[in-house]
Amino acid sequence: MTFERKAGTSEQRDRILQALEELLEIAPTDTGSAMRQAANCIIELTGADKVDVFLFEPSTTTLVAVGTSDTPMGRKQKSLGLDRLPLANGGRTVEVFQTGKTWHHNRQDEDAGELPGVKQGLGVRSHIGVLIEVGGERRGVLDVQSSTPDFLTADDVRFLQTVARWVGAVAHRVELSEALTKSAMEQGRRAAAEELITILAHDMGNHLVPIRLRLEMIHRRAARERASEYRRDAEAAEQSLNALNRLISDLLDVGRLEQGLFALARFPVDLAAIAEEVARVSTLPGKEIQLTGMQELVVQADPNRIRQALENLVANARKHSPAGLPITVSVNREQRQDGPWALVSVKDQGPGIAPELMPRIFERFAKGPGSKGLGLGLYLVRSIAEAHEGTLTVHSEPGKGALFVLALPIRDVQEEG
Image: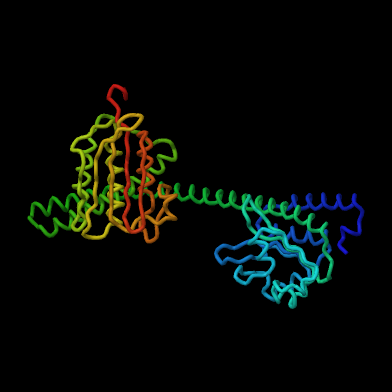
Protein backbone atom coordinates (compact mmCIF):
# COMPACT_ATOMS: atom_id res chain seq x y z
CA MET A 1 0.00 0.00 0.00
CA THR A 2 1.10 3.57 -0.60
CA PHE A 3 2.13 5.83 2.22
CA GLU A 4 -1.01 7.95 1.79
CA ARG A 5 -3.37 4.99 2.30
CA LYS A 6 -1.73 4.16 5.64
CA ALA A 7 -2.53 7.61 6.98
CA GLY A 8 -5.79 9.29 7.88
CA THR A 9 -7.51 11.94 5.77
CA SER A 10 -5.99 14.85 7.73
CA GLU A 11 -2.52 13.35 7.47
CA GLN A 12 -3.00 12.88 3.73
CA ARG A 13 -3.93 16.55 3.42
CA ASP A 14 -0.90 17.55 5.47
CA ARG A 15 1.41 15.52 3.25
CA ILE A 16 -0.13 17.00 0.10
CA LEU A 17 0.53 20.48 1.49
CA GLN A 18 4.02 19.32 2.41
CA ALA A 19 4.55 18.19 -1.19
CA LEU A 20 3.45 21.59 -2.48
CA GLU A 21 5.73 23.35 -0.02
CA GLU A 22 8.75 21.22 -0.94
CA LEU A 23 8.17 21.63 -4.67
CA LEU A 24 7.86 25.40 -4.39
CA GLU A 25 11.07 25.56 -2.35
CA ILE A 26 13.09 24.01 -5.19
CA ALA A 27 15.77 26.53 -6.18
CA PRO A 28 15.53 27.57 -9.85
CA THR A 29 19.12 26.60 -10.68
CA ASP A 30 18.78 24.35 -13.73
CA THR A 31 16.04 22.11 -15.10
CA GLY A 32 17.82 18.80 -14.43
CA SER A 33 18.59 19.56 -10.79
CA ALA A 34 15.09 20.90 -10.12
CA MET A 35 13.35 17.89 -11.69
CA ARG A 36 15.54 15.45 -9.75
CA GLN A 37 14.53 17.20 -6.53
CA ALA A 38 10.88 16.98 -7.59
CA ALA A 39 11.17 13.24 -8.35
CA ASN A 40 12.78 12.51 -4.96
CA CYS A 41 10.08 14.55 -3.21
CA ILE A 42 7.30 12.57 -4.93
CA ILE A 43 8.92 9.18 -4.24
CA GLU A 44 8.81 9.88 -0.50
CA LEU A 45 5.11 10.68 -0.63
CA THR A 46 4.05 7.69 -2.74
CA GLY A 47 6.38 4.95 -1.52
CA ALA A 48 6.75 3.81 -5.15
CA ASP A 49 9.91 2.25 -6.58
CA LYS A 50 10.57 4.92 -9.19
CA VAL A 51 9.45 8.41 -10.17
CA ASP A 52 10.44 10.08 -13.45
CA VAL A 53 9.95 13.54 -14.85
CA PHE A 54 10.16 13.02 -18.61
CA LEU A 55 10.46 16.13 -20.81
CA PHE A 56 10.20 16.14 -24.59
CA GLU A 57 13.38 16.80 -26.61
CA PRO A 58 12.24 18.13 -30.02
CA SER A 59 15.60 17.71 -31.75
CA THR A 60 15.45 13.92 -31.26
CA THR A 61 11.66 13.50 -30.84
CA THR A 62 12.42 11.71 -27.58
CA LEU A 63 11.08 11.82 -24.04
CA VAL A 64 14.08 12.26 -21.75
CA ALA A 65 14.03 11.52 -18.01
CA VAL A 66 15.56 14.80 -16.85
CA GLY A 67 14.61 13.97 -13.25
CA THR A 68 14.59 10.44 -11.79
CA SER A 69 14.29 9.34 -8.18
CA ASP A 70 17.51 8.08 -6.57
CA THR A 71 16.24 4.51 -6.10
CA PRO A 72 17.42 1.04 -7.25
CA MET A 73 14.81 0.93 -10.00
CA GLY A 74 15.71 4.47 -11.07
CA ARG A 75 19.39 3.56 -11.38
CA LYS A 76 18.56 0.33 -13.22
CA GLN A 77 16.44 2.28 -15.69
CA LYS A 78 19.42 4.38 -16.68
CA SER A 79 21.70 1.33 -17.04
CA LEU A 80 19.15 -0.23 -19.42
CA GLY A 81 18.87 2.96 -21.48
CA LEU A 82 15.20 3.37 -20.63
CA ASP A 83 15.73 6.96 -19.47
CA ARG A 84 15.29 7.98 -23.12
CA LEU A 85 12.06 6.98 -24.85
CA PRO A 86 11.88 7.81 -28.59
CA LEU A 87 8.31 8.52 -29.61
CA ALA A 88 8.66 6.08 -32.49
CA ASN A 89 9.16 3.19 -30.03
CA GLY A 90 5.76 3.69 -28.43
CA GLY A 91 4.92 2.47 -24.94
CA ARG A 92 2.51 3.81 -22.35
CA THR A 93 4.60 6.83 -21.32
CA VAL A 94 4.81 7.95 -24.94
CA GLU A 95 1.07 7.37 -25.27
CA VAL A 96 0.36 9.69 -22.33
CA PHE A 97 2.47 12.42 -23.95
CA GLN A 98 0.87 12.04 -27.37
CA THR A 99 -2.76 11.79 -26.21
CA GLY A 100 -2.66 13.86 -23.02
CA LYS A 101 -4.64 11.12 -21.22
CA THR A 102 -3.60 9.76 -17.82
CA TRP A 103 -2.51 6.10 -17.75
CA HIS A 104 -3.18 3.83 -14.73
CA HIS A 105 -2.58 0.08 -14.69
CA ASN A 106 -1.84 -2.24 -11.76
CA ARG A 107 -0.97 -5.33 -13.81
CA GLN A 108 1.53 -3.84 -16.23
CA ASP A 109 3.08 -7.24 -16.97
CA GLU A 110 -0.21 -8.23 -18.62
CA ASP A 111 -0.33 -5.10 -20.81
CA ALA A 112 0.56 -5.86 -24.45
CA GLY A 113 1.00 -2.15 -25.20
CA GLU A 114 3.88 -1.60 -22.77
CA LEU A 115 7.54 -1.83 -23.70
CA PRO A 116 9.17 -5.19 -22.88
CA GLY A 117 12.05 -3.39 -21.21
CA VAL A 118 9.66 -1.75 -18.74
CA LYS A 119 7.76 -4.96 -17.96
CA GLN A 120 10.63 -7.44 -17.96
CA GLY A 121 13.81 -5.39 -17.58
CA LEU A 122 12.52 -3.17 -14.77
CA GLY A 123 9.81 -5.50 -13.50
CA VAL A 124 7.16 -2.79 -13.36
CA ARG A 125 3.71 -3.94 -12.28
CA SER A 126 1.87 -0.79 -11.16
CA HIS A 127 2.14 2.37 -13.26
CA ILE A 128 0.61 5.86 -13.33
CA GLY A 129 1.55 8.31 -16.07
CA VAL A 130 0.29 11.92 -16.06
CA LEU A 131 0.82 14.65 -18.66
CA ILE A 132 3.04 17.61 -17.69
CA GLU A 133 2.26 21.01 -19.18
CA VAL A 134 4.76 23.87 -18.96
CA GLY A 135 3.52 27.36 -19.72
CA GLY A 136 0.33 25.94 -21.22
CA GLU A 137 2.19 23.64 -23.63
CA ARG A 138 2.40 19.84 -23.59
CA ARG A 139 5.97 19.19 -22.50
CA GLY A 140 6.34 15.81 -20.80
CA VAL A 141 5.09 13.06 -18.49
CA LEU A 142 5.21 12.42 -14.74
CA ASP A 143 5.73 8.66 -14.33
CA VAL A 144 5.29 6.75 -11.06
CA GLN A 145 6.00 3.01 -11.07
CA SER A 146 6.16 0.13 -8.61
CA SER A 147 7.20 -3.53 -8.81
CA THR A 148 4.21 -4.45 -6.62
CA PRO A 149 0.90 -5.32 -8.33
CA ASP A 150 -2.18 -3.30 -7.32
CA PHE A 151 0.04 -0.77 -5.58
CA LEU A 152 -1.39 2.48 -7.02
CA THR A 153 -5.04 3.53 -6.54
CA ALA A 154 -7.48 6.04 -7.99
CA ASP A 155 -6.63 8.33 -5.05
CA ASP A 156 -3.00 8.23 -6.20
CA VAL A 157 -4.09 9.19 -9.71
CA ARG A 158 -5.87 12.33 -8.43
CA PHE A 159 -2.93 13.19 -6.20
CA LEU A 160 -0.39 12.82 -9.05
CA GLN A 161 -2.53 14.82 -11.48
CA THR A 162 -2.34 17.69 -8.98
CA VAL A 163 1.38 17.17 -8.41
CA ALA A 164 2.02 17.10 -12.19
CA ARG A 165 0.59 20.62 -12.45
CA TRP A 166 2.93 21.75 -9.67
CA VAL A 167 5.90 20.08 -11.36
CA GLY A 168 4.99 21.92 -14.58
CA ALA A 169 4.92 25.18 -12.65
CA VAL A 170 8.35 24.45 -11.14
CA ALA A 171 9.76 23.61 -14.59
CA HIS A 172 8.33 26.83 -16.00
CA ARG A 173 9.85 28.88 -13.19
CA VAL A 174 13.25 27.24 -13.71
CA GLU A 175 13.15 27.81 -17.48
CA LEU A 176 12.25 31.47 -17.00
CA SER A 177 15.12 31.84 -14.53
CA GLU A 178 17.52 30.16 -16.97
CA ALA A 179 16.34 32.45 -19.77
CA LEU A 180 16.85 35.56 -17.62
CA THR A 181 20.32 34.40 -16.57
CA LYS A 182 21.26 33.70 -20.17
CA SER A 183 19.90 37.08 -21.26
CA ALA A 184 21.87 38.88 -18.52
CA MET A 185 25.07 37.08 -19.52
CA GLU A 186 24.55 37.93 -23.19
CA GLN A 187 23.91 41.58 -22.33
CA GLY A 188 27.08 41.65 -20.24
CA ARG A 189 29.15 40.12 -23.03
CA ARG A 190 27.63 42.50 -25.55
CA ALA A 191 28.32 45.56 -23.38
CA ALA A 192 31.94 44.49 -22.93
CA ALA A 193 32.29 43.83 -26.67
CA GLU A 194 30.79 47.22 -27.56
CA GLU A 195 33.14 49.04 -25.19
CA LEU A 196 36.14 47.19 -26.61
CA ILE A 197 35.03 47.86 -30.21
CA THR A 198 34.53 51.57 -29.55
CA ILE A 199 37.99 51.89 -28.01
CA LEU A 200 39.52 49.91 -30.87
CA ALA A 201 37.74 52.08 -33.46
CA HIS A 202 39.11 55.28 -31.90
CA ASP A 203 42.63 53.87 -31.87
CA MET A 204 42.38 52.62 -35.46
CA GLY A 205 41.13 56.00 -36.61
CA ASN A 206 44.17 57.68 -35.09
CA HIS A 207 46.54 55.27 -36.85
CA LEU A 208 44.87 55.74 -40.23
CA VAL A 209 45.52 59.49 -40.41
CA PRO A 210 49.27 59.23 -41.19
CA ILE A 211 48.60 56.33 -43.60
CA ARG A 212 46.15 58.49 -45.55
CA LEU A 213 48.64 61.37 -45.69
CA ARG A 214 51.37 59.05 -46.97
CA LEU A 215 49.07 57.63 -49.66
CA GLU A 216 48.16 61.12 -50.82
CA MET A 217 51.87 61.96 -51.16
CA ILE A 218 52.48 58.78 -53.17
CA HIS A 219 49.51 59.56 -55.38
CA ARG A 220 50.73 63.12 -56.12
CA ARG A 221 54.28 61.91 -56.77
CA ALA A 222 53.01 59.22 -59.17
CA ALA A 223 50.96 61.85 -60.99
CA ARG A 224 53.97 64.18 -61.35
CA GLU A 225 56.22 61.42 -62.59
CA ARG A 226 53.46 59.96 -64.79
CA ALA A 227 53.91 56.55 -63.17
CA SER A 228 50.47 55.22 -64.08
CA GLU A 229 51.00 51.81 -62.47
CA TYR A 230 51.97 53.32 -59.10
CA ARG A 231 49.07 55.75 -59.42
CA ARG A 232 46.58 52.90 -59.89
CA ASP A 233 48.06 51.10 -56.88
CA ALA A 234 47.74 54.25 -54.78
CA GLU A 235 44.11 54.73 -55.86
CA ALA A 236 43.29 51.10 -55.00
CA ALA A 237 44.90 51.53 -51.58
CA GLU A 238 42.90 54.72 -51.02
CA GLN A 239 39.67 52.87 -51.85
CA SER A 240 40.53 50.18 -49.28
CA LEU A 241 41.35 52.88 -46.76
CA ASN A 242 38.01 54.57 -47.43
CA ALA A 243 36.20 51.27 -46.81
CA LEU A 244 38.09 50.86 -43.53
CA ASN A 245 37.18 54.41 -42.56
CA ARG A 246 33.50 53.66 -43.19
CA LEU A 247 33.76 50.59 -40.98
CA ILE A 248 35.34 52.65 -38.19
CA SER A 249 32.60 55.27 -38.60
CA ASP A 250 29.96 52.56 -38.24
CA LEU A 251 31.64 51.22 -35.11
CA LEU A 252 31.77 54.66 -33.53
CA ASP A 253 28.14 55.35 -34.46
CA VAL A 254 27.08 52.21 -32.58
CA GLY A 255 28.67 53.66 -29.46
CA ARG A 256 26.98 57.04 -30.06
CA LEU A 257 23.60 55.37 -30.45
CA GLU A 258 23.97 53.52 -27.14
CA GLN A 259 24.99 56.75 -25.38
CA GLY A 260 22.22 58.87 -26.93
CA LEU A 261 24.74 61.05 -28.79
CA PHE A 262 23.53 60.31 -32.33
CA ALA A 263 22.75 63.82 -33.62
CA LEU A 264 21.19 64.90 -36.92
CA ALA A 265 21.72 68.09 -38.95
CA ARG A 266 18.54 68.33 -41.05
CA PHE A 267 17.79 70.55 -44.00
CA PRO A 268 16.15 70.11 -47.42
CA VAL A 269 18.08 67.56 -49.49
CA ASP A 270 17.42 65.85 -52.80
CA LEU A 271 17.07 62.15 -51.99
CA ALA A 272 17.28 61.20 -55.66
CA ALA A 273 20.60 63.05 -56.04
CA ILE A 274 22.09 61.23 -53.03
CA ALA A 275 20.87 57.88 -54.41
CA GLU A 276 22.39 58.68 -57.81
CA GLU A 277 25.74 59.56 -56.21
CA VAL A 278 25.81 56.39 -54.12
CA ALA A 279 24.88 54.25 -57.14
CA ARG A 280 27.58 55.83 -59.30
CA VAL A 281 30.35 55.48 -56.70
CA SER A 282 29.31 51.96 -55.72
CA THR A 283 29.21 50.50 -59.22
CA LEU A 284 32.02 47.98 -59.75
CA PRO A 285 32.92 45.68 -62.65
CA GLY A 286 30.36 42.88 -62.64
CA LYS A 287 28.27 44.61 -59.95
CA GLU A 288 26.23 47.30 -61.73
CA ILE A 289 23.93 49.55 -59.70
CA GLN A 290 20.81 50.53 -61.67
CA LEU A 291 18.90 53.65 -60.58
CA THR A 292 15.19 53.95 -61.32
CA GLY A 293 12.26 56.09 -60.21
CA MET A 294 11.99 59.82 -59.61
CA GLN A 295 14.78 62.17 -60.69
CA GLU A 296 14.14 64.61 -57.82
CA LEU A 297 12.60 64.12 -54.39
CA VAL A 298 13.28 66.62 -51.62
CA VAL A 299 13.04 65.64 -47.95
CA GLN A 300 14.06 67.15 -44.62
CA ALA A 301 17.03 65.02 -43.62
CA ASP A 302 20.67 64.84 -42.63
CA PRO A 303 22.40 64.24 -45.99
CA ASN A 304 25.48 62.60 -44.47
CA ARG A 305 23.38 60.12 -42.49
CA ILE A 306 21.14 59.34 -45.46
CA ARG A 307 24.21 58.79 -47.61
CA GLN A 308 25.63 56.51 -44.92
CA ALA A 309 22.37 54.54 -44.81
CA LEU A 310 22.23 54.08 -48.60
CA GLU A 311 25.91 53.13 -48.77
CA ASN A 312 25.30 50.41 -46.19
CA LEU A 313 22.21 49.09 -48.01
CA VAL A 314 24.03 49.01 -51.35
CA ALA A 315 27.13 47.43 -49.80
CA ASN A 316 24.94 44.76 -48.23
CA ALA A 317 23.24 44.07 -51.57
CA ARG A 318 26.54 43.99 -53.41
CA LYS A 319 27.94 41.50 -50.91
CA HIS A 320 25.10 39.03 -51.54
CA SER A 321 24.53 39.55 -55.28
CA PRO A 322 25.99 37.11 -57.84
CA ALA A 323 28.45 38.58 -60.35
CA GLY A 324 26.83 39.85 -63.51
CA LEU A 325 23.42 40.52 -61.98
CA PRO A 326 22.53 44.19 -61.33
CA ILE A 327 21.40 45.75 -58.06
CA THR A 328 18.40 48.06 -58.37
CA VAL A 329 18.03 51.29 -56.39
CA SER A 330 14.62 52.96 -56.78
CA VAL A 331 13.43 56.36 -55.53
CA ASN A 332 9.67 56.88 -55.28
CA ARG A 333 7.00 58.89 -53.51
CA GLU A 334 4.05 57.26 -51.74
CA GLN A 335 0.90 58.81 -50.32
CA ARG A 336 -0.08 57.35 -46.95
CA GLN A 337 -2.82 58.15 -44.47
CA ASP A 338 -0.48 60.40 -42.47
CA GLY A 339 0.86 62.22 -45.51
CA PRO A 340 3.47 61.79 -48.29
CA TRP A 341 6.49 59.55 -47.80
CA ALA A 342 9.75 59.17 -49.72
CA LEU A 343 10.85 55.59 -50.42
CA VAL A 344 14.29 54.37 -51.41
CA SER A 345 14.39 50.64 -52.16
CA VAL A 346 17.47 48.50 -52.73
CA LYS A 347 16.88 45.14 -54.44
CA ASP A 348 19.45 42.40 -54.95
CA GLN A 349 19.20 39.06 -56.75
CA GLY A 350 21.09 37.00 -54.20
CA PRO A 351 20.08 33.87 -52.28
CA GLY A 352 17.72 35.74 -49.95
CA ILE A 353 17.77 35.95 -46.17
CA ALA A 354 17.66 32.79 -44.08
CA PRO A 355 14.23 32.48 -42.38
CA GLU A 356 15.82 32.03 -38.94
CA LEU A 357 17.73 35.32 -39.37
CA MET A 358 14.71 37.42 -40.41
CA PRO A 359 13.36 38.13 -36.87
CA ARG A 360 16.71 39.65 -35.79
CA ILE A 361 18.03 40.99 -39.10
CA PHE A 362 18.18 44.56 -37.76
CA GLU A 363 19.82 43.71 -34.43
CA ARG A 364 23.44 44.52 -33.61
CA PHE A 365 25.93 41.84 -34.69
CA ALA A 366 23.22 39.87 -36.54
CA LYS A 367 24.92 37.85 -39.27
CA GLY A 368 23.78 35.15 -41.62
CA PRO A 369 25.67 31.95 -42.47
CA GLY A 370 28.96 32.71 -44.20
CA SER A 371 28.75 36.47 -43.57
CA LYS A 372 32.15 38.13 -43.15
CA GLY A 373 30.98 41.47 -41.73
CA LEU A 374 30.36 42.51 -38.15
CA GLY A 375 26.59 42.66 -38.56
CA LEU A 376 26.29 46.39 -37.83
CA GLY A 377 25.30 47.88 -41.21
CA LEU A 378 21.57 47.15 -41.17
CA TYR A 379 21.33 48.02 -37.47
CA LEU A 380 22.74 51.47 -38.26
CA VAL A 381 20.46 51.95 -41.28
CA ARG A 382 17.40 51.22 -39.18
CA SER A 383 18.67 53.56 -36.44
CA ILE A 384 19.18 56.33 -39.01
CA ALA A 385 15.68 55.74 -40.39
CA GLU A 386 14.11 55.87 -36.92
CA ALA A 387 16.07 59.03 -36.05
CA HIS A 388 14.31 60.63 -39.04
CA GLU A 389 10.90 59.29 -37.82
CA GLY A 390 11.13 56.83 -40.72
CA THR A 391 11.25 53.08 -41.11
CA LEU A 392 13.38 50.35 -42.64
CA THR A 393 11.61 47.20 -43.82
CA VAL A 394 12.73 44.06 -45.63
CA HIS A 395 11.05 41.44 -47.79
CA SER A 396 12.86 38.29 -48.78
CA GLU A 397 12.17 34.77 -49.93
CA PRO A 398 14.79 32.02 -50.20
CA GLY A 399 16.33 32.07 -53.66
CA LYS A 400 14.64 35.34 -54.67
CA GLY A 401 16.95 37.99 -53.23
CA ALA A 402 16.11 40.69 -50.71
CA LEU A 403 14.31 44.03 -50.95
CA PHE A 404 15.09 46.71 -48.35
CA VAL A 405 12.92 49.84 -48.26
CA LEU A 406 14.02 53.01 -46.45
CA ALA A 407 10.95 55.21 -45.89
CA LEU A 408 11.12 58.85 -44.76
CA PRO A 409 8.21 61.23 -44.11
CA ILE A 410 8.10 64.26 -46.42
CA ARG A 411 7.62 67.47 -44.47
CA ASP A 412 7.62 71.13 -45.40
CA VAL A 413 10.52 73.34 -44.40
CA GLN A 414 8.15 75.46 -42.30
CA GLU A 415 6.94 72.38 -40.44
CA GLU A 416 10.51 71.45 -39.49
CA GLY A 417 11.25 74.95 -38.35
